[in-house]
Image 1 (cartoon, rainbow, N blue to C red):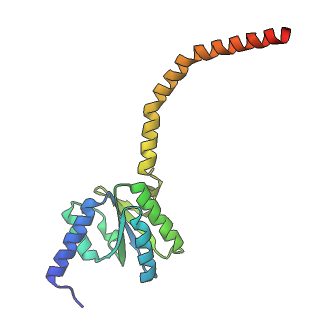
Image 2 (tube, rainbow, N blue to C red):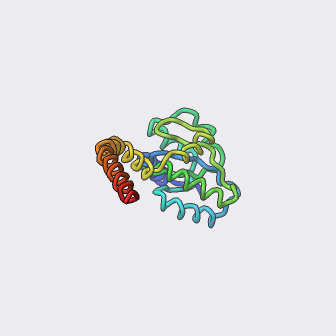
Image 3 (tube, rainbow, N blue to C red):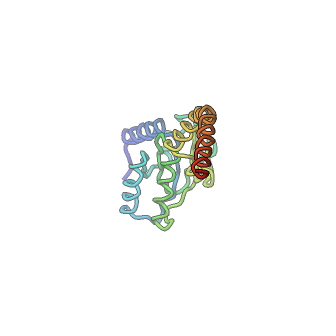
Length: 178
C-alpha cells in the first residue's frame, strides 16, 4: 500500500527531528531479522538513550538533505535500513548497539554512520563504540583537575611524615637499647 503525501511529509519531519536530536546515526542492514528481534534490540537500546527504527530510504535521504548531509549517501541508503539514532552519549549508545547485534548472532550488520555531517563507513561507525562514555569522560576530567592538588598535598605533608618516621625510628632504637 502506497503512503499518502501527508504521511510521507510526516515521516520526513519525524526523521528530521530524530536527526536533530541525535549525536550520531548508525545505519544497519536488518535483513534476516524478525520483528521480535528488532523489538528486543529497541528495548535494550532505549536504556542507552538510543532509538532504533526501520526507515524508508527515499524519505530518509530527504531528511538527511534537510540537515545538510549530502555526501556518499548512496551506499548507506541501499537495501533495507534500520537506523540507530544515538543520544548524547555516543560511546554508550553505539556500544549498546554492538552488544545487541552480537546477541542476535550478527544477523543485523552495521553498514555505516553519520557523525555531525560526516559520513562514516562500517568500520568508522563501529569505532564509535570505542569512545569513552560520558561517565568515563567526567571521571578522567575530574582526575585531571584533582591531580595537581593531590600532588601539592603530598609535597606539603612529606616533611612532616619524614620527621615522624625519624622520631619513631629514634624512639624504637631507644626502646631496644633499654
